[in-house]
Image (cartoon, rainbow, N blue to C red):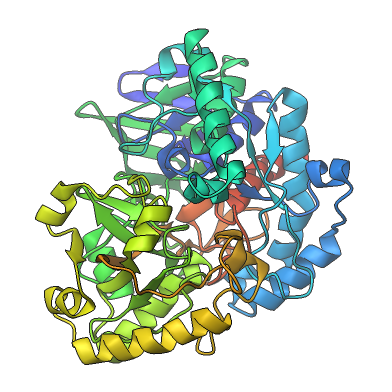
Length: 552
């Protein structure tokens, strides 16, 4: 590394510190390159560290070891069917590169000592589409955060999320902690493993924190990478047609960081940029679960030098609710039997158990049509609340403070519930009468809830004849506002199969690569399966460096 006043030089400059950035950095150091990771906040790991940490990797080595049949051809057939034609953001060649190099990337990480586990029962989100499989998602095993030494305390962490030995493959059982022995024993296993780790002086990192932690630990072994926190990207530096570095704000000082070989943009999307959300999504508010640092800086910097963008009007949507002033991205809550989602007029408008991105799209579509879905209401009865976990509320426990602050509406009658929600009681009564008849005979004739294995992944097997449907009839009744939240935006810079950033005329911006939510997603406007954000982020971070070093 060469140093002069307010100027430093590295081989590769990586903007961002999530899983895609860390995978690129690790790949680079194993090619003998000197790397700097620039993170604008005081914590590294980005939204990846907030996340469930899963990667959607078709034909992964853990599937092969378990004898689960999969192939590149089946994965492509499935992706083509569910994504469709969305233009160059998800071209045929990008999809082919993804299904080819994603397993290679994972195998390489495993050879370095990365410990993977597989959620073998977690299905693809469109299980009835040809080529769909169960168990394509893998994640990092429990990892000791204390191995990160001085970087342990600055690893990003979702607000209110404790370090426990939880894996995403356990999540479907947690709502059933008081309903089944399997749910209870899973919770006890998690608690026991967490206690053992802590009593032996270890810090159990799981989910996204395991993913980021393991990647950073492997980077640390090579000792050729610097991590700069509080380093905000201001602009890309260009000489002729080539990107030569970046200008950052570091501790109140402008620093020029030169890149001998390339700049990699992996700084997330723009979920917390109000102007961009208004421009591209048409919403005045946002209910994002992404890390606060995701304000679109890298996208704007690249646009300023002529970069093309795509899918800017889309996001990794999902129904979300607020408890204790915090955004909660809903996966299990809306799917368990005994609840429905209705608009402000009391009408049901979607399959509550569908994939989160599809439900997010449905909320937005319904609101655009009626103006009555932001917020919408999740209605549940007393039996639901007695049986199931909701956010961080244990079964049977609804803290009074949530009722006092208006985040949870509680009523002894449906008529009073409708009144408090400012909803026509007649409409809600009619909606519930129809829904309850579906629950009794086991078929949702309006939206098909509970008709495929993805819906039933989050359900209650003790409820018959449909494990996603139960009548809503036992007081007291509850209502919680639901919003079109997201895990981040999915529109961004247009890249080719090598992760090179493209100009608006389709030509390449030399020495500039991008991955993750900074880019327009190869998954298009949908979400094929669990881990469809982090899988491509890591894979194209890997591809970028392999292309840069001519080792692909």
